[in-house]
Image 1: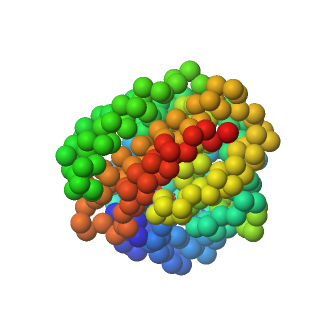
Image 2: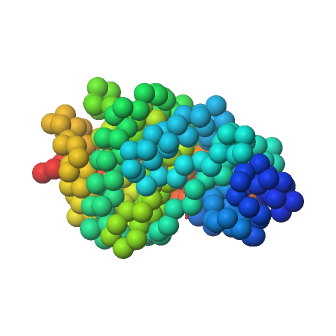
Length: 317
Ligand SMILES: Nc1ncnc2c1ncn2[C@@H]1O[C@H](COP(=O)(O)OP(=O)(O)OP(=O)(O)O)[C@@H](O)[C@H]1O
Ligand SMILES: N[C@@H](CCO)C(=O)O
C-alpha cells in the first residue's frame, strides 16, 4: 500500500472545507502505487482521489503537471484534473506535504492486458503526443538518460545487495546503452510512466490515463519504448509477448508514424527504459523507509527484461 503520510480524519475534513465538495463520508488509503500517498475519498458530493506528493515529485513541478492535465483534458483526453478550491487554488498543503484533490476516473487497471487493450493504450499514447504538440511548457526529464549514471552511482555497491554482481554488470550495460543513445530523436511532451497500472480501462476502451508525475519533454519514441517494456512482459519480467508490444506500436502509429531513425533506435530505447526502471526500483529497494505502507517493486524484473531486449535482435525484423 502506498501511504507514506497518514492523514487524520480531522485534518482531511478541515482540508475539504477549502473546496465545494460537501462533507467527508469516507477515506481509504489506496493499495496500488509506490511514488505518492493516495486516498480514495468519498464526500456527499462524489468520489475523489487525494494525492500527497512524496519523494520524487518536486513541489515546484506541480504547476507544470496541473497545466498539462488541464491542456490534455481540454483536448478531450480522459485525464484527471486537479479540483480547484473555493479560492481557485488547486495545489495546497496537507500534513506538511503538497496535496491535491483530483477528479476520480472510472475503470480498472489491468495486470494482463490483451492485444486489443494494448492497441487501445497505444492509440491513447499517440493521441496524448498529438494533443501535447501545442502545450507550450517544457520540463527536463528528471529520470532521463543523463540522470542514469548519477543514480547508478548513488546506488553504488548497494546494487550488489539486490543481486550479487549487479553493480559491475549493470555498469557495463549502462556504458553500452548510453554509447548507443540517440539524443536527436523527435521530442514532445511525454508521459514517461505509462505502465498498465496507469491506464484505466473499461473492457477494451481506455477510460483514464493517470499519474502524470514524471511527464516531461523528451524523445516521444522513448515514451512508447517505456510502454513496450512495461506492457509486453509479466510482472516478473520473465515471460515476454512481442504481440502485445506490436499492438502498442500499431495503435500508436494510428496517430504518429515512427520515423526511420525512431525505428532504428527503438531497441536501444527499450534497453534504456529497462535501465531507468531498474535503477529507480533499486534505489527504492535500498531506501524505502521501513515503516512506509508500500510494496516495493522488484528491480530484477527490469534486469530480466533488459537481457531479453539485448538478445532479441531487431524488434522490427
Ligand atoms: N484519478 C484517478 N481516478 C481513479 N483512480 C485513480 C486515480 N488516480 C489514482 N488512482 C488509483 O490509485 C492508484 C495509485 O495511483 P498512482 O498510480 O497515481 O500512484 P503512484 O504512487 O504515483 O504510482 P506509480 O507507482 O504507478 O508511480 C492507481 O493505480 C489507481 O487505482
Ligand atoms: N512505474 C514505475 C514506478 C514509478 O517510477 C515502476 O513500476 O517501477
